[in-house]
Length: 325
Image (cartoon, rainbow, N blue to C red; front, side, top):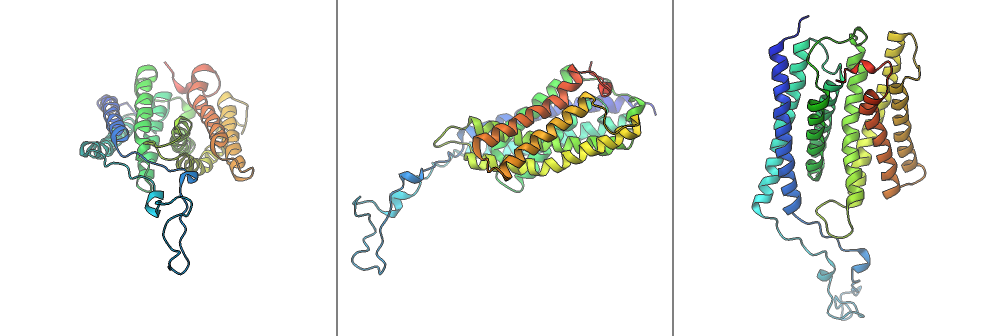
């Protein structure tokens, strides 16, 4: 079927609009994060014990005998000052801009697919555009269930950079793909890989913030909260990635007559699977928490990024049909 040049051009233009919207959203998130409420934390050892009499009699003074004049109210964490109204509005605008960028990103993906009458992830450009959409989708879905707006500045920045890289270095004209990709398996295998990658990106961003967070009051959540967000994202993404690897093997058997052939993409997909499995295993059985677990998760994330982009650019194999310019 011939390519629709009008729709293909519209798709490319929507990508540029998406980049601008994500950049504006990132700036608004940064203003919200930088000038919004500070999370004040009082260390447990800094709290003053309060002695209260059992019967509320004369001995129940409400103060500690060793620290006169200290009452229960003094043990509470100091309340952070109210953020300025414009910072609150910036946070609201950031969410709205993210949804607009997401809609433009989705429109670009659908437009590309309709223009070429196939699934719109048949080359590296389309694949990266779809992964950026998946990452922002994962963030927006998580935001409807828990307070993770602090991730917005970093997820939208990653999406804008990914789309900019795709436009600058990976863009190819819309057109047909090689016969090996004209299969229903692309809708199964590649879609699963894209969805899992989006969740892994959110986990990776949380892991980087965990390592960057300093002790004491901060505009970021506690390290425990950051680690919990990363862990939840990996828990959801890992079975999807597992399915993608299995589906890839089944597609390889159909296309090339074998399930496994040590192709670079196959090898690095499996390495990525092992790395994330090691993270989940260490956290579940060895009791790894905190910095050690986060480092393992980020090593797995580095394997994922190399598998998604580096393999197609630097290594040759059966997946070299990705049309990198």
